[in-house]
Amino acid sequence: MLRNKPVPWWAILPVIGILIPVVLLLYWKKRPRERFLIFTPAIRVPEEPKPAAQPAAVQSVDDLTVIKGIGPKTQAALNAAGICSLSQLATASVEQLRTILQEAGLRLGDPADWPAQAAFLVKNG
Image 1: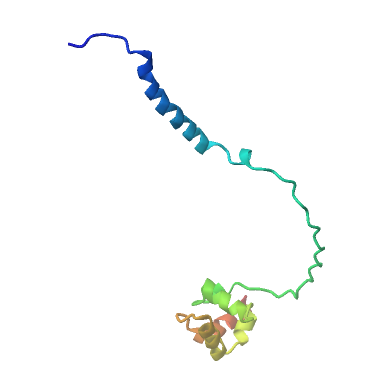
Image 2 (image 1 turned 180 degrees about the vertical axis):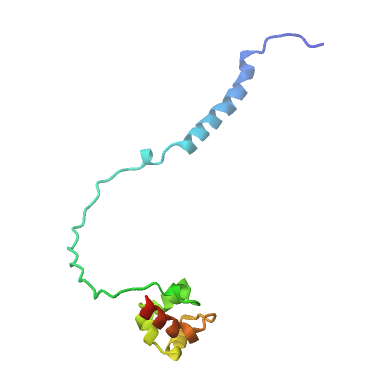
């Protein structure tokens, strides 16, 4: 049979000895790091004045994705090659367009009717 004896005070010491390091470890992990950094004054290096930006020639950029077969990647490739408007696309040759697509690594587009579609859109708005 179990006797109801009180627990001696020294029997709690191992429990306290385990709990205190655990609590301190958790506190140490969650503390903000900035509080313990050594702060030194920042040395400022004077900046050189930036030259004023020269306005580039304003070129109208049309949405070429209205043409059937031209998606965002194809439009980016055409823009990189200098074809940014529908009128430029209407005057471009099919061979030139195929070369642009090959250099960009695009294989799915067929530019055979793109100049005709662009010319129709330029003419009819």
